[in-house]
Length: 286
Image (cartoon, rainbow, N blue to C red; front, side):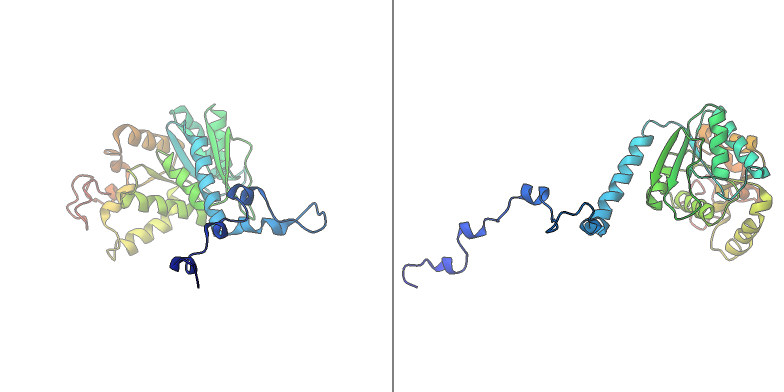
């Protein structure tokens, strides 16, 4: 073509590349219907895409961190949402919440009814921080009335992060799959050193006996865990015993608390002397 620079055929002119709208305009404008319509759910469909969920997840983390940033020593209490207020376990959980607050700890639960409510109630009655990390569920879960701080979450993994990050110990009362999930996740995190040691206290040997028997005979018996792994579990019967185990571990960094553990009952090596540990790098029997 006469009088045309060779590159002009490959690259369009600058004026052609200028967008028809600015970034601000793209942000502030949105699609509308041809006729006025006060409700248009279809316009919000983009908020259910994965990129938008990432932002929602991020906002939940920020929300939770902000809500709990000034929290001091705290213990998370787990247990069933299905226990009635007249059940003996309800009073046991209530006593646990009360004793923990009197020992200087805030109490965190899943914020729901049953044993969660009972622990929050005990903490509330003792005049301490009573925190509920509630979860959006299609059934069972509602916030109980004994919370001084209530935080609502959509995502289990965000909620679990709050439990672990802001707790100095777990007290685990009788419960179902959700309670077992929290128990084994805590055991895994401590065993693999993703978090520092902290006490994991099971309440009620009769309730946990079947599980403990299986762990000791099947998992330990087949070499899936080492005896020292059971140093991580403490079984108690009373609120005072739970409080003492938590308090002792807080003061001694758990170096003496193993004496209360299932590992000690089975004559496992103490922390610092893993003579029979499968992995001798676990020098504190984690």
